[in-house]
Length: 57
Image 1 (cartoon, helix red, strand yellow):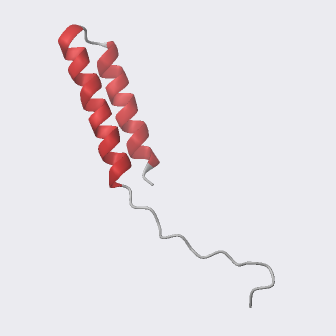
Image 2 (cartoon, rainbow, N blue to C red):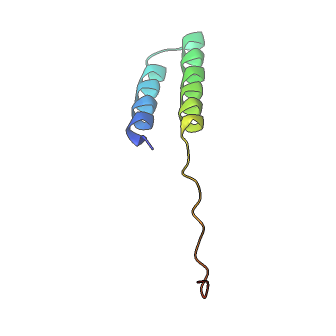
Image 3 (cartoon, rainbow, N blue to C red):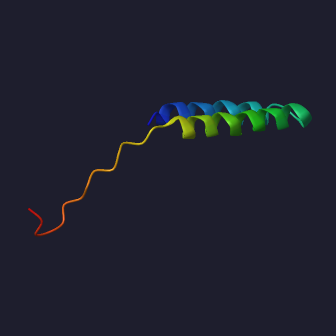
């Protein structure tokens, strides 16, 4: 997972949100949510490996 990308996005959007007000701030917050959602959905998980059961050969 690209944790640095998530951290960078959060830092940029928090800074932008703190420096603006009103409709601009709402749009920045909406873009932040969409960006993080896109990153979260875009991450492909590895297929689950079958676990070994004790006594299974």
